Amino acid sequence: MTVNRTALGLISGIIRMIRAPNSVMTGLAVITGMLIASKGAWSLELFKRAALGFTTGFMLCAAAMAVNDYYDREIDMINEPERPIPSGLVKPKEAIIVAAILSFLGLVSSAAINIECLAVAVIALAVAIGYATAGKATGAPGNVMVSFCVSLPFIYGGLTLEALDEALFVFASIAFLANMGREVTKGIVDVVGDAARGVKTIAAVYGRVKAAILSAIFYLAAVALSILPWLMRVVSIYYLPAVAVSDLGFIKASFELLRDPSRDTARRVKREGLLWMLIGLIAFIIGTNLH
Image (cartoon, rainbow, N blue to C red; front, side):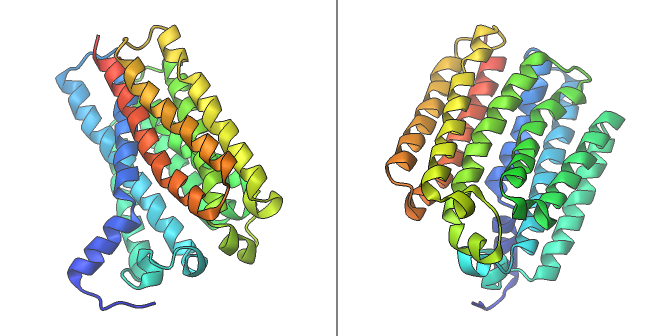
């Protein structure tokens, strides 16, 4: 499918391609990690590092999305033909140029913080590119690669202040589990194109029912772990109402998938999953910043 290209259409296509909401959430996850490490104490220096940290998270996530869409352009003709590249809004070459610019900006902003942040940024970018080029075809290992990148911003946030706290790893683990559930759910949505291309997702290899069961296990594991920050006393009581909304969302998603592991249900759960993750992130921010 092709469309008449305009400058506005190209800009719109790029914004869609980089998954702006996902990229913003990655930047916010970095700031959340900083708040956890700083115990909610703000300062001018923290504001400066927060700006750089958010920039790194946003830019590298956006770059990873562009690289992913470039390598997925053929399979997206089957699974997601309305996406920017298969629809003609963005040319493959333009996607690579955008990814290169975003990667450069992300690495520069990380280098401006400290050498540890630069090292983690390079690792995250390498894993993201590795996933797009080879990891996706492996199925479950590819899901782990993506979820690793989703959980890493919390650790990165602590590194911006050179203060790693055990609570950071708890939040990172919750994000990892929730995203693993979402990745397996995405496999149900993309099962037709993935099977045609030989991508070994759980859904393509073992079927939609088993994929739905595994997704539910990951979602419910994230829900179970979400109480731990409160038990550790690293968040205030204000964390509980917000995280309860996120937890209920993931519980609802789990039951919906188990009841009907169809492509349409999985697509809805995948989209709603991003909302539950955002609410969970807001809960982390509220819990660490309000006492």
